[in-house]
Length: 428
Image (cartoon, rainbow, N blue to C red; front, side):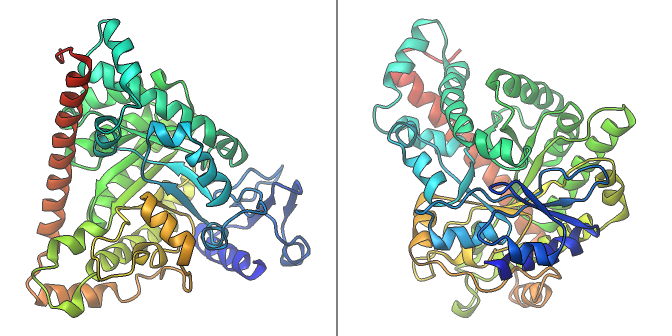
């Protein structure tokens, strides 16, 4: 365990280019040297820039290890990666499943989207009573859905709140997606993001905005307004960089206005959809390689941004990094490992959000060997091979983002239709 922690600290020193503080929440100890690390074993690790007066809570934090903590997921967390669940249902809140994932599988956050809620609400009867009650209040359509979603996400946020507090807001987040029907209107998206975050009344709720052209403008405006944002539907280095620069501009505007620079954000890169998109156009030996190559190229850009003078200036003033989040990490190829996109993406200062089957598979038989290469590894070589095979990566990234947006639109419409059917009240 100590070796793993030292690897994380070494990686973070190179990323942040500043001395690090290692915080052991259980012991209440702040370690500044390797000797201290070796002295305090089996402790939680977090890392942050050292300040002259006192240490701040960390960039990546580990909670206490209980006797039941799964060794496989615990190792990922020890490497400095946050594990989030890409799902939410009322049943998992009611029966204690989410609480168990937090206690035993190192889950420290949660993501949702219209498709997840469409499946949760459209199947079973967990929401029937609330749908009927809210409908009797005269609410329908999107307004009714948001009542359902916010009830679930508040409960999830409350379960994650101890983690959120212990990490000074770095971890312990839930996420709610903006209506996909408004995301092409930046001004409307900015107002809706602020309204939803305020309505949730939970500090640890991200509002999800897609990293489209209009979304980039909304991301900057929302960050400037102090709304924590999960940037979704990113499929390439270029799309990630555009969203990261929007985040930086929002923080820089806050700096110029004399506002607090602590507005948290993650940028979600979707991985497995790349491999699904090309599987019938490439040789069998090339399958399940493109998504990882795209991610490696993007991770290199992420590390370069964190080392840039522009970011370092903001960090010195108190800003925290927009973390890179690995999304769409469930394996779609039945012939590939069911833990492919978890094992391949072990990397500090990142988040991996995963569906339940993938989480449980990794807990059962997942392995972690090497950290994600900070220099992109063989990404460019692999991408050149795909270019030779006729894959236009730039065009495909654009297509995947459009398809992702269209899929959320479809799920949104089906979700509202399902609620209308159950409530007997037609959407406004």
